[in-house]
Length: 196
Image (cartoon, rainbow, N blue to C red; front, side):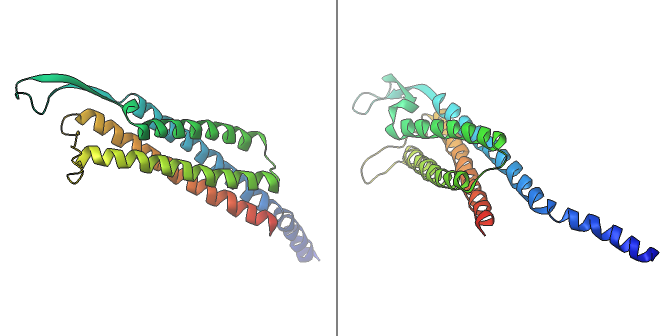
């Protein structure tokens, strides 16, 4: 009789612990969601700050004039529409990450509708960040290598600090895109678990 009582007592907490497993999994996904959204904010803001503060002025020889005559030229992010789009897209992404981080913290029990909305918005922002990264990266590559076929000269041999900062901003935005892809996968997986 005593062994039966021990077995019953031992099995009762195990059966009570079983319903806690989905809640623990949801808490784990929720914590990961918040961490990734904070990292998304950090990467987005870092990319914007590095891009906006990238500028450099140099004395450059002008083709057609004697080589000892140099004029001042400056390189700034707002000289390129691709870099302006980059700053706008990553700024909006930073704001989005703040809003969704607060939503993840303040709304502990999300409904299927909220998960669906987050999944759609995450995928949309993956596209926005990827397109901004591609546009800025394409212009940065032309600045680095030039294009002899259309006679676009490279500028990174002259504006080296500017180019390094642009490259750093593009790397930060790549991290932001990776975080958004991970967030999309987590949100879709969580939504799948809820409707299954």
